[in-house]
Image 1: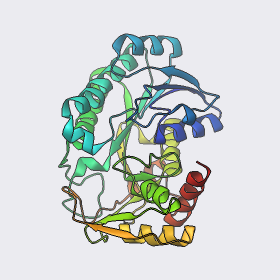
Image 2: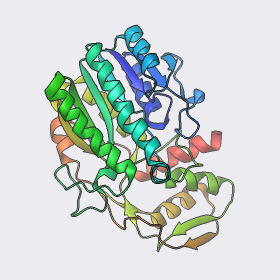
Image 3: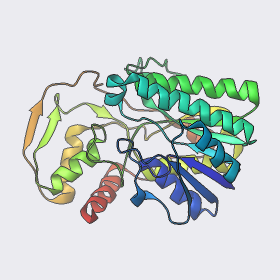
Image 4: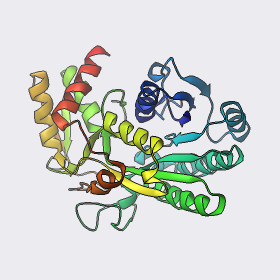
Length: 310
């Protein structure tokens, strides 16, 4: 297949690119390399064709589609920070909504067969019931979550109006190698870097808050499966592990892996923090044949090894 991955120099996107190339596909990468977006030259696969383009740049995006003529687009490019979305909601909407519309317009114009979309568990906000599945009411509590929910509606509309096939994957808390340890999200990456530098660890609230951490390689594999077979066409899937892991457990797992226990600094609950969230991913198992393969211990080990090299 001829695949275009937007955000393909980013944390998740670069792992998708690697797996697509390993599977024998022809891959092009489009990334703005925006400093706060996570896209880095060092993440680029040398076997991929690279276009340094922003999805909000209509003329440049049109040229990329005309050059690549992709069969499938895997749309990972996004403004992914909840904090930035609350400070700059107009930026969040420009990238996550207008950027998506720009991509969708070019998909139609270039006769793209299918689009894969990176949605988010943030579309649920505080879950009204657990575990979270595809039918749980979505009540996002941040501009980021709102734009991801709006994007899902655009995908449905585009399919009905223009016949573009889509699959959307609502990610849990993705972690692993190449995640930015300097941002406000990604507790495993942030902790791993601080552990290795013997710096203090800040734990908010009581540390017992749990999220569903899914390894980036498993997320990339879910995207590849959805690209290669049509069982998930025009549908949405939760992609996570089905298990919550607390911040305190992450601290203990890292301490066991690294052999060092840094000082803990306690902090109050952050606004919007959810105490418990985990997913039911049985739909992805049933329809896509996808299940997570990397458990939290294995994933943390791989993440630590990556940061040791850095």
